[in-house]
Picture (cartoon, rainbow, N blue to C red):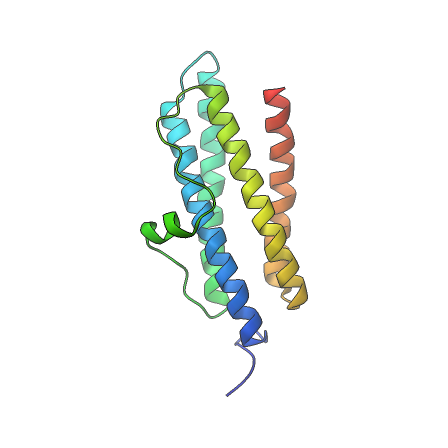
Length: 157
């Protein structure tokens, strides 16, 4: 039996990466639903601006959900796909009944900060495993999301 998977990574490294990517996937799914909720429920004087911005965010998050799941498959593992598992393993918690624009923006900011922290961990694991595919993917996510964090912080003052 080979010690490497179909893309040439050591089985143990691929398993460890897939496990952490499944945690990332769970966080993306919960965060996606939170941002959808902010989009639907935000109220206040910044409604039009925030409603549009939240749609941009959740559209991007949905694309990343698919990309992370496909990376798990590429590593030779199965992506987690039950919402009960997402709730159980995600660090991001469901955010319910949030209507205030500033509170919604703070929720988005916390979500991105959580994703960045987890993605940095995965980036380190991927680098150690010589997994350029995962490293490039999460590296791109980190770069984009750091800029978003800066912008959200500027919005909040």
